[in-house]
Length: 236
Ligand code: BEZ
Image 1: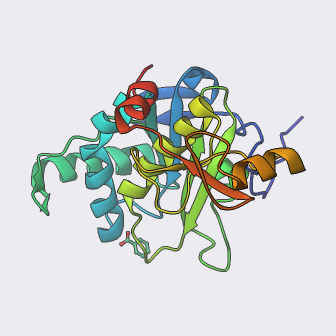
Image 2: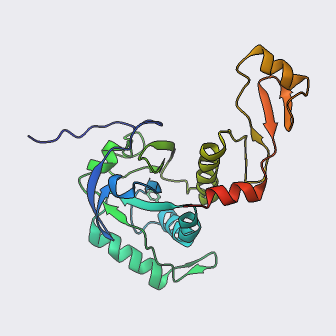
Image 3: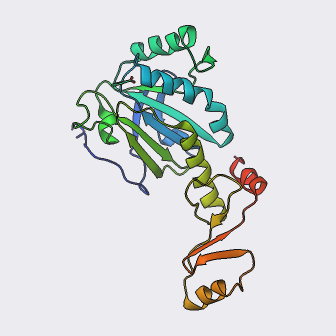
């Protein structure tokens, strides 16, 4: 029986929809073959376009940084494999941009001419385009669970430092059972879980809990040393 393709947006906390696909690095079985690693699955609207080219050069230049976080990258557009190959060759051989040149995109780029994967991941958003994927990003954890999602329109290039920060923050939250405040970076104070009883709230507000600073009973932070964070999140 023919498989029905869903037009849906996956949700945070759910298993990443699975698929098999042809890529510039051979076939992949997603997310199964990425079990044990973090992975960023991201879409771009089209090969041989300027915003996408700037994004690919930036992401490829940061691939080793993400690898140090045990995080792999996988791209997708609804173009075909030969277009992908030609575009990646052009980037490496001809494009120089913001000090980046000779950039080799080593991570897989999925061909998705049928839009099967793009539709499963809500990457086709007809209000923006019926024929191109929007700029979607899915951060998926080592168990294959979607932990964060970002969608941008065609006209707007993404901030890859923010994606790097997001993976760091997700890993730190898992490692230390904390939350991270606005604009958090390793070394900044972190948020401790909200008091679960009146007694704990009172103790914290009376300064009886060592190392915890409360701005109000529901908003308490503590120091988390940068080296401690980095050591934990850079481990495999
Ligand atoms: C770009 O990457 O430059 C682009 C792609 C599709 C539509 C608009 C811009």
